[in-house]
Length: 169
Image (cartoon, rainbow, N blue to C red; front, side, top):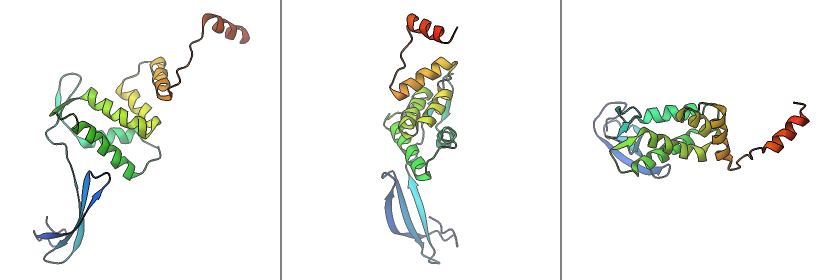
């Protein structure tokens, strides 16, 4: 690791700590030439993972694309940067558990939605509405009901008639 001040190629590790949920390591380093101290972070990267798109195209996995999509879903929602990093780490660990060098974009989307569902329900609905391409209000309502686990009762014809009568329809 090169020193960020003098560019000397030799630094020594002074301290090492696990961060987050043990998915990253923070190292405190000292330059052997000028004595400058600085920190580095090491994280597991998903390398050589290919995402298979719905149309059959293949593209390299991109953490930044996941981060952008999740940030967009979380826009104007309360969350900390530490919680966000942890969420992205959980998503990537779920991907790694697949133990494959390819993943379908649909599987990737489901992993993200499962994690968002527990993290922030509004962000989950936002992500799901784009990912699942809701075409009408009914499909959106069904998703909301599944989220609340309280399916709305369908009106019977008699109940609907009574409602219409009360409304003067």
